[in-house]
Length: 98
Image (cartoon, helix red, strand yellow):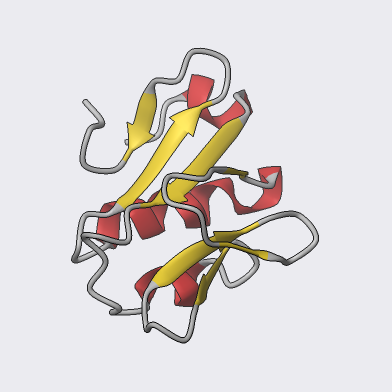
């Protein structure tokens, strides 16, 4: 369940490629945020659409895509998408969320 707090907080997202199964749900949910690289794994993109390939690198979640990114994290079969609040670094969706 997404709290009202999560709906207004700034969020960042990253993908743990070591756990990525290449299923593609994230790309279907939010193609502006997630993309496959030639290795068949999902990565996040920055606001200019550039693929961010360094391990653990985060990108901001556009406000209009918040729910899609959170849903992608919740539905990910590899449990590899981490969505965190920028302000306090608390994971709101993903394997380490409460």
